[in-house]
Length: 297
Image (cartoon, rainbow, N blue to C red; front, side, top):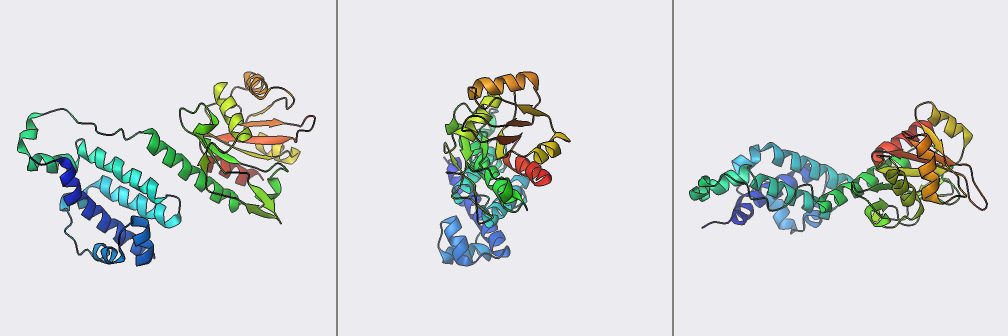
């Protein structure tokens, strides 16, 4: 009797750790950096990075393993992916390879009697909410990097601050929306982002996105900008705009705006009693929204 988990420990982990350590070192990370990211000792990094381990040839040739290592080394090097998110991606790859991939083949060879079973044992769902959460956080990080490097964005941040948010596919509440804790601010002309993206830290901007989705929009992300007629005119050339009443209930106001312009990509309000006028740019994900801002500010 041999469990597939034994195949994972004996074949998959040494192969993937070795490939990943090798790739991270090739990207310029130190042994100490790699050890911290992978949660292993520096001596283990040296062993893995130099190929001084037994690698499984079938896993080395597997396109899904190659893609996994490429994505992880890129994400970990740039900071777009945290070690926890990398762990999730590895776990998902393992489950996929267990269900009809290289690990399933290796297991069948180790336990020939498994060949009589035609079904698949789905241990984990590769489209799990946990994996999606990691992807959304990573997406917001990419969008924030674009905004930070966009000339003129600091001047587009309203007095109340900006936020860039993106939600899960089945989002219902602000707890399902990733955003910057606090607000994105302009301090001495510089874009200041106070912390890493988290779930449930935006109230107003997240509420605008959720209201838009409840009333027909398929947007998954939004960023808010200061109200400016020139910006609106620039956006109007390429996108559908809809105005809503700042003094009305937010959900009702956005419902009314989208009833008139069902395909609106930009929502805006021109202010109200004690309410700053704001523009909201919607899109399928945070990097796309950030690129729209880059093109039109």
